[in-house]
Image (cartoon, rainbow, N blue to C red):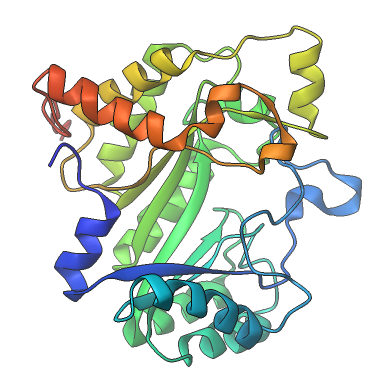
Length: 300
């Protein structure tokens, strides 16, 4: 095992095949409210989630059919990942999340959100959920560097993120963090520093994404105007391998690539080659006789 992947984690924890069902709860994002453009890479769409015009039950039935045809005995994690899934009154969250958890074979819930969108009431509800089921809170970060967060219009700083992670961890809530490699003006050292910082926070899981340019984003305008360059697939694979080598072996790797709809992708073309990216990471680790955590060191 070259890295601690999500499939293995679920199999170890639940003893069976576990698949995520991607629900669209109809949430928005504070970073896009009142005319805001959101993060500069955000497409403003719900590309891989269920259809927002359908009820949660209908979304469940649609996806369940596909998964069960492939894995008849699979169990499910209800995944709310579109936009900011705690950006609503707590009674709305309670209604939607408890409904999703009521569906047959749903054994847990994963909620994608931002560190600055978990109110005290919401936090209390998350603590309640954590006692009822397997709860994961996924926090978007992208980079630990405040200059980068400001440039990408993230809307919060590192301190705000750190404080929320520590609070969630103190409540024994599973935390997964999203980062992006190849953001404009970030060096390789900066990307590795992001991993070391997340190690220190003792997060439970990580999603590593490659930067891609999607149509209609602020990032597209900057890219077409020649403001920055994108890394090659080979460079991305090399950086991911270096990140895995210093990543704590206890942190579950949920993703190693980012995805968007083919018709929305501006660049790089290799971002479409998910399998080649994943195979490239394993091939390089194997060639180097390396693995996740090979050079991991505790800083405290």
